[in-house]
Length: 275
Image (cartoon, rainbow, N blue to C red; front, side, top):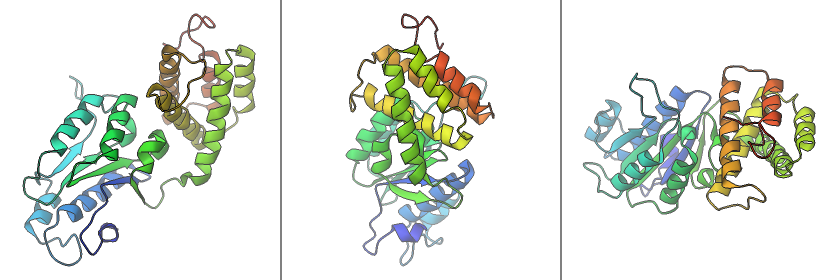
């Protein structure tokens, strides 16, 4: 796989989206690709023998940087990769490599980037600094903005979800839910949620990811927001984030859609708060 991404003229994609069924699998592939990207040997890459390959394999290469969620004062990972982390990455990416021809940035659990971080990452992917490579690792590619996904070469590992049909179904569901919420009609929102409450967990997760991606586009001005206020969009985003968390601990999908029905409209619109 690493060799397939390096052309005979030693060119390497500036960004790859690595989708895998498990976090450690995606991260391992990213490390192999990083080794290939910094390899200074001849022939097929990574050669595994040069100084750069050995340092990358040992996790001590100064031009291979892993970005992951920060930890709190108790040592637990925070909820998101923040915009400040991406801004720091952007500032570092314009600095020349220390030893290799390239600097490689591995974004572990890239789907945990919050909307502002994804927007900052999008700008970086649109205008990447020369010699910088970005490897986004994820088990949930649909949680990333479509614009972010489209700017990366796709690396899908065995067992990763096939998102083609899932994307189409999620897009239709997201459109229906957002139309219902935008109507401000509680009965319409409830009807929509009842009609779709029998989805399987995988489809429900893809739907929630798509809603969040669309809300992020609205918040960043890349999509029309209709009657949604900024507060509405942030509230819905947090609601979908909560529901995604509940799905991860095997909460029943019907309960998720019940939450989506009763908490869709914040105080001032229906009298219920999502916080």
